[in-house]
Amino acid sequence: MQVRRYGFGGVVLLLAVILSCPVAVGAKGFLRTEGQDIVDETGEKVFLRGVGLGNWLLPEGYMWKFGPQGDRPRKIEKIVSDLIGQESAEKFWLDFRRYYITEADIKRIGEVGFNSVRPALNARLFLTEGETACYVDEGFELLDNLIKWCRKYDIYVIIDMHGAPGGQTGTNIDDSPRDEPELFMDVKNQDRLVNLWVKIAGRYKDEPTVAAYDLLNEPLPHRTGAAEKYKDQLEPLYKRITEAIRQVDSKHMITLEGADWSNDWSVFSEVFDDNVFYQFHYYCWDRPDNLKSVSQFLAGRERLDTPIWVGETGEKGNAIYWGTTQYFEANNIGWSFWPWKKMDAKNTPYSINKPEGWNEIRAYSEGKGKPSKELAQKAFDELIENIKLENCVHFPDVVNAIFRRVPGKVEAENYGHEGLNKSYFVKDTGRKAKHYRSSEPVEVEVIEGDRDRWVSEQCIKLGEGEWTAYEINSLETQTFRAVVRAKAEGAAATFVFSLNGQSEEISITETDWVDIELDEVKFSEGVNRAKIEVSCGEVYFDWFNFE
Image (cartoon, rainbow, N blue to C red; front, side):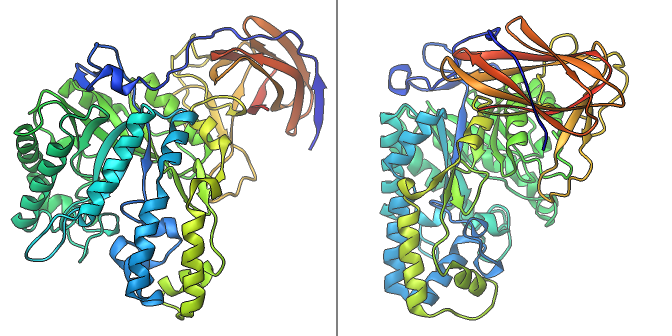
């Protein structure tokens, strides 16, 4: 790798405004919808930037690295019980739920910048199955604790029914017992869901820390045939639940998800409540990376004239995280990152260290040999220690990418979304990018030789007189080492890297990628604007790194 150094003295940043921060929950009261915005009781707009508390009250097999025999809560529970016995398993689960999310997690969630959480609930933790259903104290006590901590640290709570009675998807994600969406197949399950929501609403009706009730997570996927069979029942069920909730709670917002993993909004015919907002989920799993359009949801917002919100996004890499939250906010869409932590990962704010012997337990979940009870007990005991926040691995680069702030790497393709002459200028506005932002004219290309199966490395190409601009957040006034990765196309070229109207012109002759090191650059607290403009020739830009 080549490294070149250029002077960049005296650089300061153009724009500094106050970064968004959590509204003081106790002081501002209940949130409500007002047109296409969410506001507090004073009428001040509140932008929900949240994180999902997945794997806590509804364990998901992929976050345990498990195979098909451990892909959902009831199967994970069976594995634990098979390996260490029922009595030890019961103790394990009590400890797991006690330590997976604690006050320390909520405090940290607020410290890094999130202002809301979306806990994923499994109805089975609140309501027993079988012919005679009984309420379970533990689930409500855990939720009470969460809300108490969130109240203390000014964090809103969106209560998410991730696994409804009988299951709303017929897949592993809702703890479905028989891979069927039995919520829609048996009115008894719907009755139980309605009653459970009424109990939740009655418990928290006077709690402003609770922002909203998320009635059903990702119901009725198309690929299983569930949507075609049952989606005509979805809106009527939402109406029924909402009407029941309003008998005990007239204050809280309700959020509704479309069919097919939340994203089929054709099921919504009317706005039947005056304090409701609609939700979609947004994952960019395309390869090469692709920033998918949200135009259909913007059209839905206009039709419904309510706020819209991304209840889940994430599970990829930092370039996508930066690009997606920027895209949402440019379109007045709040969001919730998924999830806060999971095992042996590098693409979440926190990662849980994999216990010793976990590979043998994972193999058992894939139908292979059964490990000894001693090995399993030791691994599960270690897991209880590892899930505690103080024992997890923090990835500040992930958090900084989510909030688009320094220190961190700014991918060149993540220029702003204000359009021509504001976020970019190119001469040929009729062309379209090959990748990533394919509706826009800035040339985005996949870097040759990139073979990562999960994420792709991409770059932009700018010609003479063309430019792109970036908004970069900083929590405080601070200086960073700056590096730009670029290469010339064919012949010597020159570009200008500027911040706050002060700029440095850089000549580049290399036609292979070169890391160009600059002097320290100074960021102001708040939002800062950077710009690159090619003054001669053609230049490819990969990224800008500030450390």
